[in-house]
Image (cartoon, rainbow, N blue to C red; front, side, top):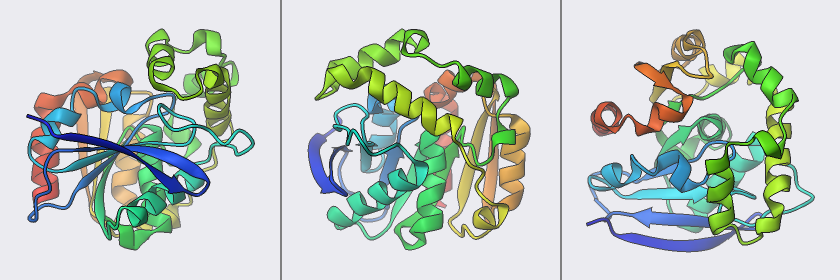
Amino acid sequence: MNQRKTGYAPVNGLRIYFEIHGAANPTQPLLVLLHGGGDTVETSFGQILPVLAAERQVIAVEQQGYGHTADIVDRPFSFEQSADDTAALLAYLHIEQADLFGFSNGGTIALQVAIRHPNAVRKIVAASALVNRAGAYPWLWEAMANATLENMPPHLQEAYLKVAPQPGNLRLMHDKAARRMRDFKDIPDDDIRRITAPTLVVVGDADVIRPEHAVEMFRLLAHAQLVVLPGTDHLQVTARTEWLVPMIDAFLDA
């Protein structure tokens, strides 16, 4: 049975929400889950989290303005700030080094943690992660340019409203998340090359991220493995538990 504890950490002006699942295992570093844009822990990792937590201790985090974590209204969302917030949370919890599993925007954040706080990261699973604008299809950028709350997927709206401390900030969360994507700046190749943490690059073959982009990341990273999930779109990536969990376990345990 999954053990679950929840808490809030005072981090960089936030009260950042986290969940701890499973029992500590001295032979396995804990695994930190970083959700996607517009998501909560539940919408990014609801299916895969309990399976992962059966084998290792998992900490799932909700970033500034997402899920249970209240926003700082006048502070924009940025991948760099989220990476710093994640590293500060680990420090608050007295975790010297962890494995990171980031999905979508969370995958980009995981890579930024490795760039900005390399000593805090042992291994990375980067699923559907974006490191440059050419890595996504043109239609994604067109959608971001025209993004409104009214065309945000209803299940993401409902998940936010279910747990948010300030439900009235739904539109603000959406607009800040969309702006972060519209303003996306390429991560320099040299920064990616400097990541020394072994990284499992995961992409769906029908993802919003081009498979070619995953291959390019795989080539840039010093110690990488590559997974392309067949018949898998963006929203299905972390639900492919029967494929992903054995590969993640083998990668992290190697």
